Length: 71
Image: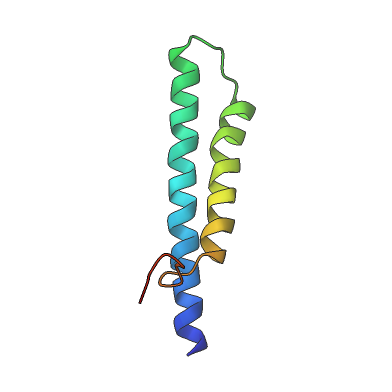
């Protein structure tokens, strides 16, 4: 039973990291569209920090544990 919860937690952490990375890529793209000069450190942080935050949030949010579900 713990393996099932562990697998779900890993999956949600992975999805959170992917969503965070996508948000970071959008941030870098928007900065590039505004003609800001982007160095590698900024691009790495802009993609890495949201990905890390998404993974942490995803690890703590388990599917099916929503309080908005009235059942």
